[in-house]
Length: 353
Image 1: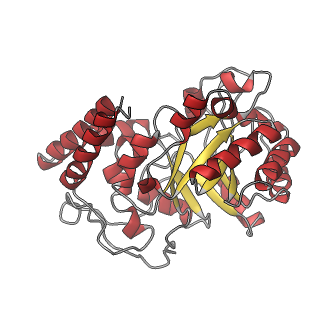
Image 2 (image 1 turned 45 degrees about the vertical axis):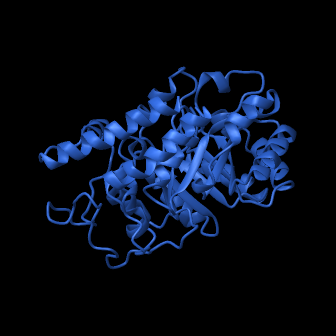
Image 3 (image 1 turned 135 degrees about the horizontal axis):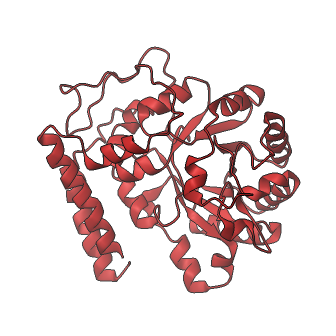
């Protein structure tokens, strides 16, 4: 529920603050460091961090290193990934306290969840106006149903409709109407889905996918997928730089860890399709790491669990460092706690949990 969720998140903030004041790393930072993929490229210096220039107000210097291409507000230069059971509307509202420009994504919402139950539809689709810019991620493979759901999503006010072509779960890949990563084997169907959605909405339609599945993991096959789907009107591809292994029945967690990262595929994709917006996802756990990828020419970076575990560290300086916004939006942990307290009480009073 809302109350227990925020109690846990605010306790994380308080604990992290206490540990930092005592000169200890936060629990979240230690957890993230232990989860860093073995294939993570060695970081070269971008922001020089020290005890003097990193404090409780998220101060990080410098603002704009030489050659760093700043983003304009509204761009997808930094995104928080859609994560099942994690990025619900309460979490997204919380994350928005740290950054006003970072793009947020819903959990994947299946077409059946929208079309088969009116109450579930409302629970899945409603969001707080403070969440903008916000994208709705849909899961499905029937063009007609996806178009209906996309139109409903646009009517709710979402800024983007994203199609999930990356989920490796058996629950979605081994069903009658399978969807998720398995759709990479049928780019023509994905193109049909994109075209159907674009025909009924005015907001951007994007696709989030892997670099391949099972033995269909060559760069040529990835290019074919992007070429076919982009011809249907998709101009933005969010690419998880791992293939999905579906044949061995790995869990979603294993499919985030076992397949090796191949960032070069994503870099090359941007070079070969310069007219498309290419956003890299997978294994990115801080803004320094994000900058390494941006330096390679990709248009944006999507960060997942690190942003959830430690939003203050990941998003606290994003508006200034990534978007060049010096309007003073950065907050201390205490300011975030103070902002959240009345919101939590309001949600509890409304039983919005």
